Length: 438
Image 1: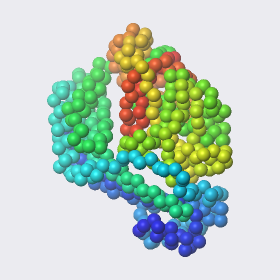
Image 2: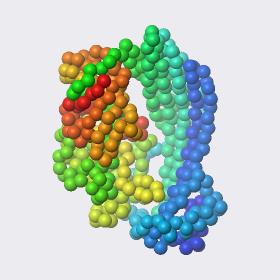
Image 3: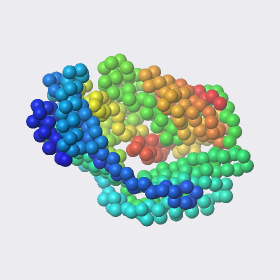
């Protein structure tokens, strides 16, 4: 069923103010364990979401299918909801903007033509490549898959938007053993062209990451200088990005209240939100149908903007920033970010550490982060560094602190960024006065 038909049926029942979204995603995956094909999986997922207003009240509905019966159920559910739900300003349903939407290249038709034998070939070759790297590698788990999705957005004011995306994903987890010690690590790569998949390069990277964790020892606690690799640094930065929401600022729940145009972080830190970078994770419009735009959040430590959805923009007489996300309730949110790199090679940043760590990963965000206060205690993995030299792996320790102080204590950024899954582009960061517990 087309969304235009849904809109017509809803209007016939007196529901005139609506936003409709329909999405379809599919994936084809193969899984190898120990070099043997374990299974092949094909899946299709559908989502239908409707949000709008009846008599000034918010109404919403969601389903994983869409047909005439679902539309009838939607109408009934919405009419029942209006008696007990919250107020809703139907002016927040937007007209077509006067400026264009970004044209991001997110869909690659050749990927959707890949079949099981194509994916199996990659999995087999990668399994052999990893197994050949070192006799201490005892097991591998490899997944190769192609994913595609399409979505349509339609509202009662005539705005009709469509988007689609596709990508190939290769993940490889390795288990290595030496004596009684067992360690593991993984890599995950995305591609838009199957010819760009280099199994030997992936095998080199994952085997080196994993084998480096052997001969691990207990760490040294205290207040240390630490170099956070991009994924670990991104975990810390993600704690603060939600605080740019004008919804949280408005309710005095943000750590950045009254901080606009003020220096809050290290002057080495510049953060941009970049939903439009012409890659597979780009988004040309937000959850309200408003065009997204690249923007500076932090410039040399100074807070440059808050993020506005339609509601907050209207309340503060501000232009929307294309950051309305969520369902059924929409609030300002962040898409993908980019942190500007520095001018120093990562190896030279490590040489400057007299007593500290290289932190390769951080986990425990679900329980270890208080997003209201910015406080965190996270499990870490990495390497102990003494007098500028990596001494040994430390496979379990914790770091703690608060995100504002942490980002104030940045004293160096690497000259290269890493593209992370999800679209963030992040350098490594050297941070002083990190509290480490072992």
